[in-house]
Amino acid sequence: TDEKDPSKPQCSDGIDNDNDGKIDYPNDPDCVNIYDDQEVGESLSPLLIDNGDNGYSSQGFTYFTGQGYLNDVAFAASGTGSNSATWRFVVNPGTYKIYTTWSAHPNRATDSPFSVMDGNTIVTSENIDQQLAPKEISNSGVMWDFIGSEIIITSGELNVRLTNKANGYVIADAVRIERIGDLPGPPHCNDSIDNDNDGKIDYPNDIGCTSNNDTDEKDPSKPQCSDGIDN
Image 1 (cartoon, helix red, strand yellow):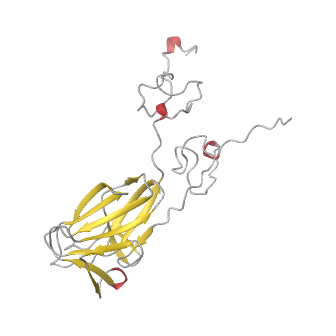
Image 2 (cartoon, rainbow, N blue to C red):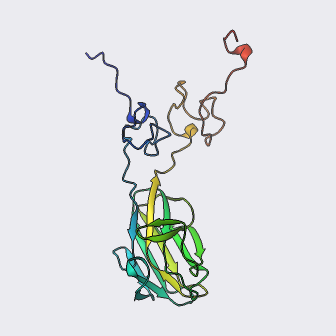
Image 3 (spheres, rainbow, N blue to C red):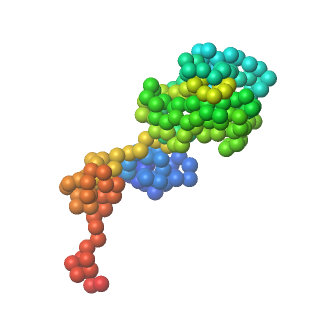
């Protein structure tokens, strides 16, 4: 009873529905596939937890004022790693960047051991020289350095942990996280979607797929002498 064409999903309609400067799948990271009808993702606003905030906990660290972000830090002397500080963020699964800041001093450790965890699973670790001041980005009135690179979180919890297994004083100040995108989708040849609209889906049914891990479902071009064209 209705001759109108069905509307296209937001992630394949050629429109920047969420006004973020990115249009459709795969250009907009909030699109899971071309059939996704929600181009608007969760807020990508950074989250920040300072030492002493909700989400921060520590064992064996001493609170100290007069330096650091919001004029306070926590510290622990060099030890076996039994003393620790943890910043716990409740998040949606996705890809994140993690930063930390600290107050530099010659008595600091050159190998302060930070770990980033997806829930309880360590996904990356980095030893940071806290004798040197952070310098990679400026935000909220202080400088910050990255911990690791881009981190994929699949659970609902992102934890950052610092221990005192180091060669000097370790400083627990603030940690800042920034969600930069959704979880990576499955390869085109293993996503149950006809990405190239040829009526065939995934490996081994689509001849454009060489394996389940192939990210391009497009069929290979035919030789000129068998493509049905007067080239």
